[in-house]
Length: 311
Image (cartoon, rainbow, N blue to C red; front, side, top):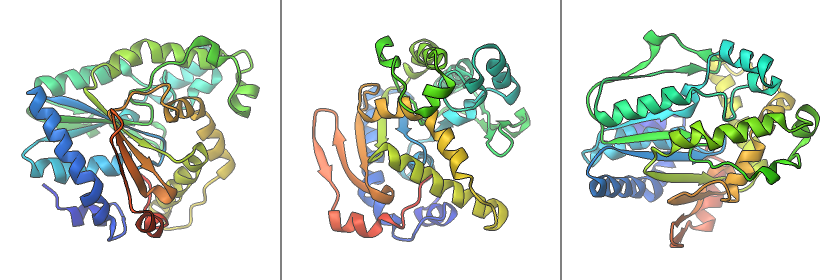
């Protein structure tokens, strides 16, 4: 078990992030423990959130500290680690649509592998969780996979579109941005993505027992959060000399826009718990299914907003 201070230091979070852990994440851990107790078996908790919303940070605290404190063994499976290989996506780009060579949307993940991993973990079988490197845009060799031995109590399944549902066919007709209007004029790409969301992704997400959402304040904030995240990654990788191509990043985020907006509107998502994110990723409040709400202290949230990074 890892202590909170160690995770805060490792994740390069401000020291006062411990208050966020106590106010929001520790109660969530207790809620997950209740869900596990009621189920009486291994449960899958989906963690949904747009890019840079803090999914991996939350999972780190839950898996390594908060759930172990409650006597529960947890493991995280990231949707990102299920991306198809670069060669497989390039083949999709040649045979189906050029935009599918870009990782991200439904259709660019190995859903069968994801389902097998969830089933093996739930059954207590030794499991290897693959790792995807964004630096090389490809899956790492099998020997670098994360080995999980023995049974686990909680599987944290995190990803930007985890739990998302397909849109109605008529909703696909009008492009949501310039990328769709210019690079998907006949709608073939978005129809393919939607069909996959309705088929094999639906089967994968059906294994989720409870869904938690980190909901951004606006779609515009998604770009800002991802830009901050990219700058932090560049600082670590290049000693602060790496530059982020903002135009390229904006185009990349555009491929996520349609599904992200639908999830934010809750027309393509049905979460158990929603954490509303404010400026700078401070948590503005929480809404439980059924309508119960808890709001953060506005003054406290505003003062910490600038110092709370995204993951």
